[in-house]
Image (cartoon, rainbow, N blue to C red; front, side, top):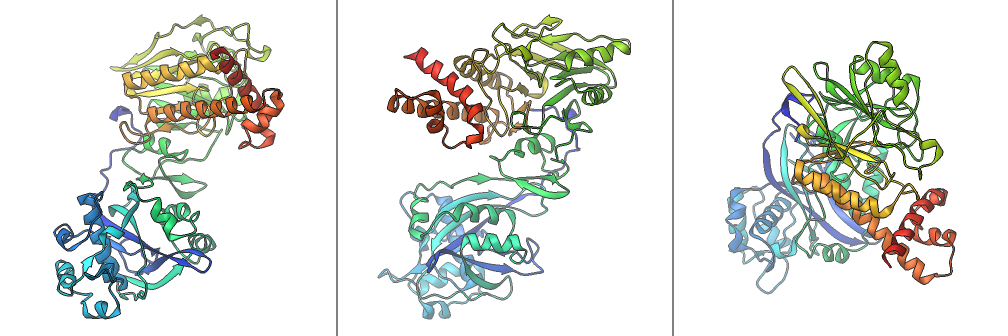
Length: 554
């Protein structure tokens, strides 16, 4: 984990998380699946005026009402309590009652009229019991699990539950907390929100996005039978294009927001800029070269590690772009101690010599470090460092009692001379092109080798375990990762990448077996049919690497 002394923003304790529950009441409409939504009061303390699903805080009495509810054999005590809370809230807010008589008949309008919607919360289950009703908690399933964003003043730990709307019941808003109940298809709710006349907040948007692919209530409930939420998320927020932007754990910018603002402060800007450095930690700056493209994404990321007292290591100076190199030199105050190239490809290493010359002009010549390109490298990737670094070698920056240690890991695969670096004190992995954010790296034989690439992924996994690496800083794209032991940490990123590669390889093998006489052109069309045809020439290179590996294992 990054040292607290290196975090770019002061600590801010997030608001306490309160338990809550909400329920999506579903029905099969004439044009497909519909969900019941209502508008919150304009004076509500949380999401005023937003269209939401009924729900609210979990009361102590909800946990004490288990005896008045029917449960599934696989339904945990926690999920039962949450279901009871959701049933109570949907009754109080909308007059919908998920409860059954002993004969199995669902509560009807007479039952609902006989109950007091404004009664003290603890009386709800008793009122139902007095009328011979058992809460139908067994018909309420977990759909998703949201934890309110860390930057917000009111936060909730809330399952999004789902249940079938009872027949012969009509929603009637309480006109206090909820107004204007409306049945709407998920896709229509999203479209109306986009048009600006149906305000919904981020968790609602993301839940509706997942729900819009379903056509019937039965299909939704069938996919909830595992008792596990479809996803669990505590989103993070930053700024993009001058506007607030929120992201779930699987989305590209999430790891960068987790690194720069671990407490959830909405302070980090996600716009790709080439005219100034981006501060990731006090001792880590990213400068992106102005070379965006299909192969480079938003551009090649150069990194400066260090501070004015220790001096800096420049990682991947990038192309020989005078303006980019000048910005690197200025961001380091000219105090560059090492120039390190993760590999010799032309968007990574050509800037090393001119950056070194720039430093020399000002009285100091830092060594260019890395591994020399192999004879298998393309002509444009020729590279010879001042000194080759060894696997496991440490580059140390120190001054004024502070130490920054970069450990070298030789990771052939994308290129024969590829290396990664671990910033030991802060648990960061500089991955070059071996691990990218937003795409998979190209393995281009003969300099690229798929066996080596997969073995190097295992090597990085071991480093993540040894150094408790939380975040990966790639040469292209945002920071990857999350806090250790949460669902999307650095190890999960690498494991996902490896699984993706092996899944692709299995698809390639199947195509090869089914079309043994086919050409590489034939195979790429079928093995990469999920990739736009314009990218098939690039995919062809990785296809060849997979084919070579498959044949070597035969």
